[in-house]
Each structure stands twice: as C-alpha cells, then as structure tokens.
Image (cartoon, rainbow, N blue to C red; front, side, top):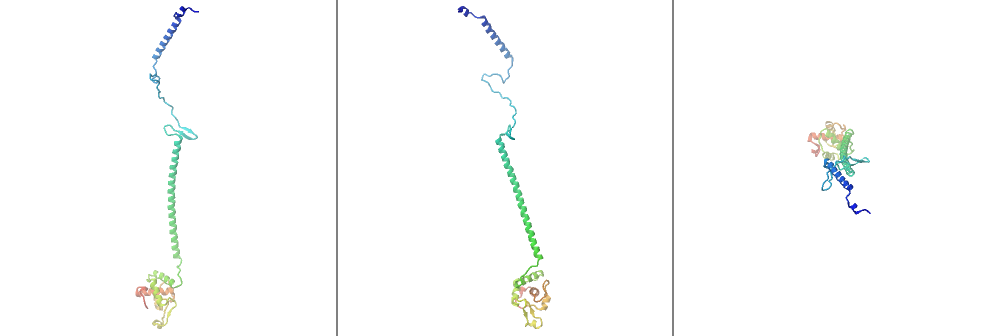
Length: 242
C-alpha cells in the first residue's frame, strides 16, 4: 500500500508533460496564425457555408442514336420526340399543300385538254359535214329544204312556209303536174312542176347547182323562187298565179 504523502505530492513528470503540451499548442497556434486561410475555407461562427464551385461542361447524352439531353435546352427525349412529331406534321402539311397544288394543276391541265379535245371534235364534225353532202328526204319537205340551201348560196330570198304555200296552190305537191289548158299551154309552153313554171322562164332563171330539168323538184323550186324574187321581191309575196 502506497504512502498517502507520496500520492498527494505533485509529480514533476506530469508537470513537464502539461507544460510541453501547452508549449506545443502555442507553437501550433503561431504557425496557423502565420498562414493565411482561403476565404472559401475560413470557418464561420454561423456554421459552414456552401461555396459554388465550377462544374465541368455537360455534354449531350446520346442513347441508341437519340439525343436524350442537350445542355441549356429542353433536351430530354420527350421534347425532341414532340419536336420531331411537329416537324413531321409540318412536313406532311407542306407536302399535302404541294400535292393539292399539283392536283389542281393536273385538273386544270385535264380540263384544258378536254376542252381542246372537244374543240377538235367539233371542228372535225364541221369539217365532216362540209366534206360529206347533206342528205335530204325525197319528199316535199326535203325538196324545199334542199332548194332553200341552194337559194341561200345564191342570195335568193324565200321562206319555207312561203314556198310550201305556193306549191300546194299550184300543184298540190306533185312534181309531175302539168297544165295543158291555160294560155301558156295553148302557146305550146305548158306550165310544169311543183310551182308550174314554163320552159322559157325556167331557162332564164335556172339556178346554178341544180338540175337543168324543168320537172326536177329542187330545180323547179329554185328557178321559180328566183323569178318571184326578181318580179315580186320574194316568193313570200306571191299569193296567186304569177
């Protein structure tokens, strides 16, 4: 058992150790005081503060050929997909507009071609009509119509009704009718045909383009109408023997 006096006596070794620690602490404090601390590393009484540090430049993330993120932009995949979709819609709208214009142009071109075809067809029809002789029925109606076409070419007046009215009075529509009892017959020049024309009159007023036959229906009508136009202005003005 130790002596109480020995235990209560101060130890030189402990004193030295404390002194040494104190001295070492003082020296460390001097060293630290002599070294300037960076502003960003200086301790604060209010607690540690976060200091902004420069981050390395961020590059675009690419996955499977698609841009997932573009720094500084809305670069995530969804936005790019929407942008591409909108671009695709605009492209489709533009293409639709071009297609519509092309279709409109084709339609106009088609209409122009059809109009041109119709014009050519009409011209061909008119040409065919001119090249082919017009056909007339072999009756009073056809004879009058053919005679009037000849009369038009020779500027001889006379309506369809005016001619037909006089034909019915003179011969009742018989191209072979002959008057053997009037004064002309007594002179040896009987009246013949649809409009009862004598030979001297027929010869004098024969219309070019018709037969030189007094009893030919068309030739008889044309010559009689030519005579009536010269004497009365037109066959329309004749209402009795002429």
